[in-house]
Image (cartoon, rainbow, N blue to C red; front, side):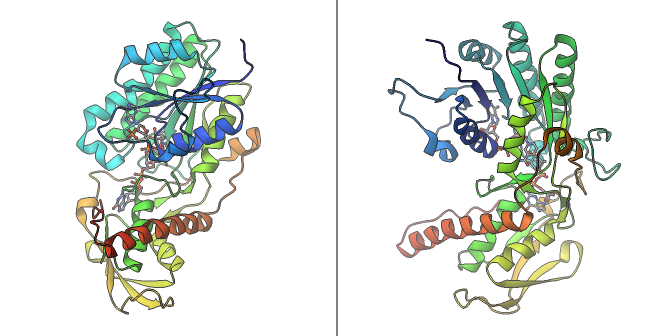
Length: 374
Ligand code: NDP
Ligand code: GDR
């Protein structure tokens, strides 16, 4: 039986963006195939609500084991799935960790992208399959101009960014050499309640909730001066899809056009629970002190130190300032952000407070709770 439904293949389906994109594509009537890694514990928390029993005859959400470092598996899967669209989201996506695992990062993030493009070419799907490559504002690295546009030169500052730079250009090259509809979305930071716990925004909202509830004393961070253009992941996955519906394959900057220092994100998160923070000292001696607490539920002493700098979170080379100019996406594709940063912080705080209340309840009931803050 033939079907007019489109088929998408998402690598990195278990990640933040993979989960939101799956929801989005399913709501548009797609059949969604996702690549997940074999892990010793389940790693599908973010997509469990989409799971369908493999014994069901008609499924529109199907998971496959695989890895971006395994070419033959990727070729076999793409041959079986015959996707109309591939969203290549899988990556070792943590900038700081890429300094510890540079070779693996290059393999998964850089060569992994080549493996997808080459599978499409090898299988003769150049005219059928459109490819979205998850490129990043980290490509801009050392500040050369702001705001950053599609024409701003790259100067990557981490093994992650260098690997993604290879992925960016191999995508452009396969588009030009073989006529594949392949696009880079140069996405600036985007966050959500399901953001990985070790990225700075989620680390802050989790810790702030835990501190308010008395589950944690202090939050340790690295560079508080770094400035990021933070948007909501839901706005950004919608744009991934819009990019693949355009008439011509191109590369696109996706950003809010506003930038905020890490320190301000901390202040906004504490403010959500009625705690006013005062920052004192500079550099590694900077501290965050409770100035005022308007919420009687939280027993925080005025003057308590709740934030300190730990140099172990500094990166060997840092990206100081990111602010993107999404004019091209706005004017040519009609994309607009639906979320402001204040909405994002509120949503993340509400979600983490709820999760941490569960931890609090478990702790009071004598269970051991996760005590790992990286
Ligand atoms: P996450 O870290 O949340 O998700 C990454 C996904 O990739 C996970 O599903 C992970 O699997 C998977 N993965 C990692 N390594 C491999 C591998 N070797 N083989 C197969 N799968 C692998 O990232 P995000 O969802 O935030 O980001 C999605 C993509 O967009 C990434 O490529 C990221 O680099 C890029 N990006 C992200 C931005 C952001 O602000 N979020 C901005 C710009 C680009 P597992 O769950 O098993 O770990
Ligand atoms: P980033 O995100 O490196 O921009 O990459 P992250 O949230 O890790 O860092 C943002 C900024 O905050 C500073 N920072 C800290 N970061 C972390 N993780 N932990 C800390 O304790 C801390 N203290 C300060 C960092 O130095 C940095 O300047 C993210 C990832 O999603 C990439 O995959 C993606 O490509 C880019 O965003 C766009």
